[in-house]
Length: 76
Image 1 (cartoon, helix red, strand yellow):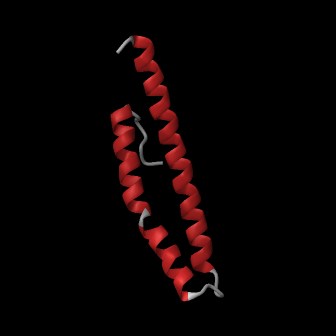
Image 2 (cartoon, helix red, strand yellow; image 1 turned 135 degrees about the horizontal axis):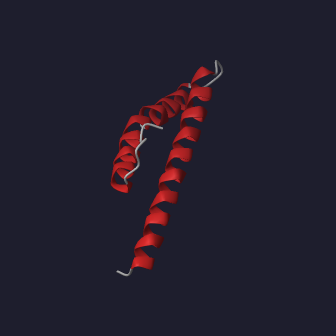
Image 3 (tube, helix red, strand yellow; image 1 turned 180 degrees about the horizontal axis):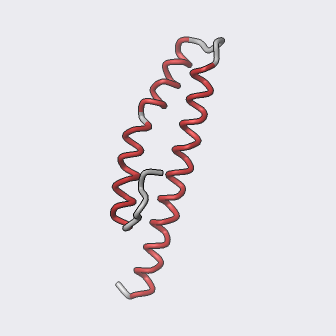
């Protein structure tokens, strides 16, 4: 792999990492909003809770990607 290819790959991974962080923040906000609604059906509440519960696994994966990238602050 040439230097230019490596740089392009690193930029792509970095952007995908940022996309993952933004997506995770959206899932967190949506699931919290749904879980706070009083009129939610039991099935919808269960689905929102499942989405909320999956967040820690996603955070762990994003931390791994950040460590591979060499990010200093992977706690975001």
